[in-house]
Image (cartoon, rainbow, N blue to C red; front, side):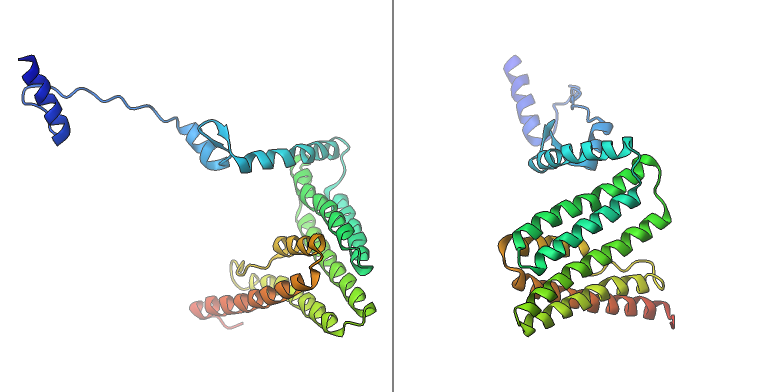
Length: 248
């Protein structure tokens, strides 16, 4: 009798059915805490209670940055001042590029962009974020970018490389057009973040070119991707306006 019942249970389990007259026992499933699930999907730094590799790298780099941010908050340093300091450091990077000291320029750019990162964090923690702060940050970013390009123009002009003076000038022109196309488009449509070549990608490429001494090749990449980004934003804006039937 016991063996027949056991066999029926096994067969029913295989076929997805349950023997007649017997009640299927409740299946206990582990509860999934909603809060933990939200935290894991929000940060993605932990998997099964263990920190991921990228999360560990971020934590390592954030440790000194958090200390700098706390010092700035305690000293009540205004975020606009931090932005200006970053620009001044970037001018030193432009000088290093102008005299051909690429590796030094790379390290200076890293230091300059630390200030570009922490100014927003300090503004948030001190409650000093403002519309003018965002405007000031954007203008100073454009100034920093142009300074780096001008350093390269001076370098290639002193080396009598007219071809790379032209390439640098074109890359600088389309860098400005990249920002202007978005600003002008977003006065007409909601968003225009089309294209790959924005400032973070451009700064990373500058650093790669500086540390690897391959700045000429990097300028080609910046130029081509900037042209594609500007063209993409023009097309995106045209398509959006045509869809609305708006005439500028």
